[in-house]
Every structure is written in structure tokens, then in C-alpha cells.
Image: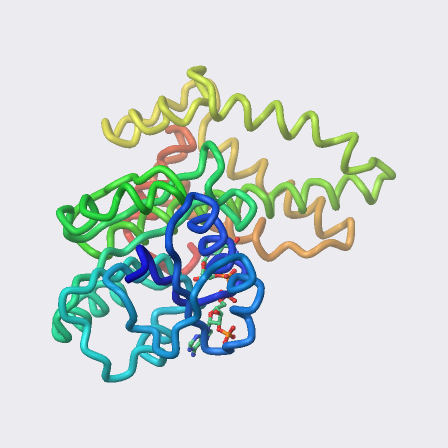
Length: 289
Ligand SMILES: NC(=O)c1ccc[n+]([C@@H]2O[C@H](COP(=O)([O-])OP(=O)(O)OC[C@H]3O[C@@H](n4cnc5c(N)ncnc54)[C@H](OP(=O)(O)O)[C@@H]3O)[C@@H](O)[C@H]2O)c1
């Protein structure tokens, strides 16, 4: 029997299977489109006719629905499924029940690197679900990335993963907006990039803009705004939106930020700092004031 079966051979699953092979594991692969297994078979993988093959199944597909489509009515007795696909926390919890009904155990995960990062230093994966099942296979899974266990709730790995992706996508998109704005004045994106890097360095630092300190403010519920009030920043964000619009650029995301700042201001947080917007975020979406 092979050490691991990889289900799903998109860019991620293919890189995972190749990484397991490079680490010396005996690897079986399965994919809906069987032809994608060719390059991995050439490297020494076995191709399975059915996905529910072996004891450890590592899954990387577009969604959790793909898992149901792939496994169908197969029994999963004694098998551990480690699903590293994207989904919602509710879908992951439902999938844990679905797998258990068929006799298997589901460990959920969110892997925090793109295909070339798999197996490289710095790669890590958030895992949640039954810890003993994860521990049993941790030595194999460590070929892909560091194993970061976050808790028993099967939905939790995806919440950590999505929390990271939200920051990642927001930061990258704000860089696109910033670069596009400066481009309208003839400034090349590479000329602006050093300033963007400087800002991100500050966020990563222990300084007053550091995320560690912001986290402490959120936990304490104290948002100092004497030096730079939320009201001042809400007005400034309005100017950013006007500038982008005047430059003929898309303003969807900046407008949404401005609406959030203005709402927090209108809800009485104007004299506090920017972190006070968390109070409005916690209340859920509301009509603009
Ligand atoms: N790429 C990244 O940088 C990255 C990073 C972290 C996490 N992820 C996550 O990793 C997962 C895989 O991503 P990916 O980039 O490899 O490509 P993807 O396009 O998200 O997934 C491709 C895989 O899903 C399979 N699939 C889609 N629908 C299916 C269905 N109904 N039944 C069975 N299989 C189905 C495809 O099979 P066919 O070949 O037959 O179409 C293929 O194996 C995703 O959930 C993604 O969000 C991706």
C-alpha cells in the first residue's frame, strides 16, 4: 500500500504529489481528468482507478463539492482524509460529518503557499479537526509544509486560512490601486514599490503601526486616537476616493473602505483611532449613514 494518495491534480495537487515523491514517499494519484496523472506516473507515482485508495488521502480540489463528486458512495472505513481545498467553515464541518458517516476521519487544512512554495522553507498549513489523526500522519504531511494545528473545530483551519487571504488580497489590491494612481502621473510601479515595502515593513514591526500592537488594542477595546483620529482618516479616505475617481480609475474597493470609516465615525468613534472600525465590523453590515 502506498504512503499517501493525492486526489486532485491541479497545480496544487500535482506539486504536492511531486513533493511527496521527492521526499521518498510511495505515492498514488487520482484525478477526475485522468490524463493529468501522466507526468507524476513518469516520476514514479501509481495511478489509482478509484479515489478512495489507501489509508491517507490528501485532497486538493477546487471545492468541497468536488470531494463529494469524486468519492460518490465509496466507504471510507479506517481512512484519514486530509482536505486542503478551499471552502467555507460550514462546508468543512458538514464534510467532517459526511466522512464520519462513511467510516473515515476528516482533517481539514488551509495551505498558505502557492505551488512553487510547497515543500519549501517557510511553508505552513493550518490544520483543524481530530488531533490524533493529524499526529498519526504529521511526519508524512511535513513533506508539504510545517504542520500548524489550530483546534478541534473542523471549520477553524479555513477561518485562519481565509483570515490570511483576506489580508493578502486586500494588501495586494491596494497596491494595484496605488500603483495605477501613480501611473496616471507617469510614475512607474517599480519606482513606487520601495515605499510600499517600507509601509509593509512598519506593519510587520514592533513599532506603533505594528500588527502586534494593533492586536493588543483590539483585545483591550481601547483605540487611542489623540494623534490621528478616525474622523481625520475618514475625511482623508474621502479625498483618496475623489482623487482615484478624478484619475478615471475604479473606486469600488476604496469607496467601501470610505463607507466603513464614515460609518464608524457616525457611530461615535470619530475621536478614537482607526482600530475602532472593528466595533462597526463586529456589528455586521448596515446601510451607510
Ligand atoms: N494555486 C494556489 O496558489 C493555491 C494556494 C493555496 C490553496 N489553493 C487551493 O488549492 C485547491 C486546488 O487549487 P489549484 O490551484 O490546484 O486548482 P483548482 O482549479 O482550484 O482545482 C483543480 C482541481 O479540482 C478538480 N475538480 C474541479 N471540479 C471537480 C469536480 N466537480 N469533481 C472532481 N474534481 C474536480 C480538478 O479536476 P480536473 O483536472 O478533472 O478538472 C483539478 O484536479 C483550491 O481549493 C485552491 O483554493 C490554491
